[in-house]
Amino acid sequence: MELLTAFMANLSLGAHEALTWTNLWYCFIGVFLGCLVGVLPGLGSLIAISLLLPITYHLPTTGALIMLAGVYFGADYGGGTCSILLGVPGHAAAAVDVLDGYPMAKQGRGGVALFMKSVASFWGSAVGIVLLMLFAPLLAEAALKFGPAEYCALMLLGLVAASTVGQGSPLKGVAMMVLGLILGLIGTDVNSGTMRFTFDVPELSDGVGLIPIAMGLFAITEVIKSAGQASVSRVEQKFGLRDQLPTREDWRRSWGPMLRGSGLGAFFGALPGTSGGMATFLSYAMEKRLSRTPERFGKGAIEGIAGPEACNNAGVGTAFIPTLTLGIPGDAIMALLLAALTIQGIQPGPQVMSGHPELFWGLIVSFWVGNIILVILNIPLIGMWVRLLSIPYPLLFPGIVLFTCVGVYSTQNNVFDLWVLLAFGLLGYLMMLLRLEVVPLLLGFILGPQFEEHLRRTLLLSRGDFSVFIERPIAATALGVSALLFVWTLASYLRRRDRMAALEAAKAAG
Image (cartoon, rainbow, N blue to C red; front, top):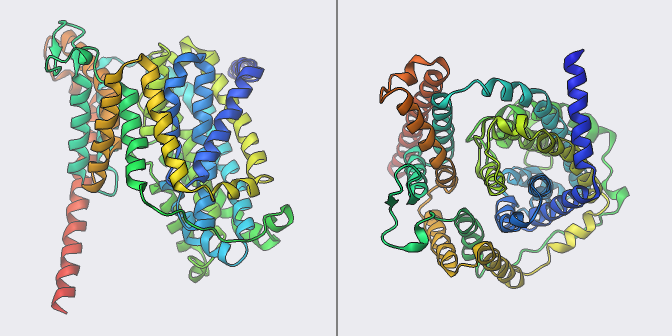
């Protein structure tokens, strides 16, 4: 009874914070911008949040976080629209919608696909938010008992997971993570006051700014990559409300995949390094395996939309669990949200819930409000979002460059930041050509200073004895899982590479 009373009191506190007119406005702005960038191909929540980071300097803490989280939810809602209508994914997690959504659009059922996408997204988000409400307080309470050794080991686990779990080479991912850690060392050492890696450049004495790095790696890189591309044309069809309503058979085929997909997405969303669409493709593969008519998949099966969309949005909710309770982001978007907390002077970790309960529970309530707004925006206004797809790239991307430069310069009124923006934009494009992951680099840069701080504190308390990491059970477990994850991922990659080489050799011989 006491737990229920405390839970209701926290919800009341969150509602009092989130349901003010100011925060409702920030929530609406966030989800609207999220839908906008999600619908337009080539953009996404990463670019939108990186563009909005400079604005958070001038906003109240809760309003800034509500707006950025709204962009995250909104982009995941809107990302499937161009996948279904154009066959071009708005972001990585929406790529799976192309498989069955685009065939449905060509069959004249694009409205039904978009309607079911919105329903599945709302259901998945609701599951993720409920799990966040239930498990985040428990994890935060346990995390308050952690020492620097536990935090150091858990941060290492997050970095290793984000570096090795992916499509590319795990060695390349680890290399990018190490590069991010090195970038995080630039500036003045807080303990000794020594300048590190500044090369006598005065502007580097405070380190490299997160905002120009993030905006360069995502916004400028995307502009360079998309320069010269022609705008794609959409499938022409009607999008009235009657044209969007699924049949009874559509509902029968969709409710099971939504249940299974939300469970799968909630599990993977809380794990670091499993973003970028991996869980959605697992959901799609599971539904195809369980279906009695797997031959329908790829030809317009509505289960191929309902399951992955519920999976994707459930993962969005549970991704906040380690981010808000441990201060350990699972992907680049969560890392940017942590950066927004740091900009506001709040130290990420379990102290967020205990020291700023109105912020945490205000975010929770705003998630519910944002998802209701998203349903209103995505179902009746689908026609408006579709018309946005006709914006030509030659008009769209110069505007992104303009807002990026203005945002970077406005943070510190420093021209040097613009050169950093350009440098990391070119670096991001080079990394894309070399198939190097950007996410490990950004996570290494953000977590690097905290990792160093906890490592130094641990060794100071233990008088330089590294055995403290083995003597403490949680730290030892995290280090063991990190080592096993790296070895398992490397072995899987080598087996996959050998298999591909064997297939190439067989084709050449045949």
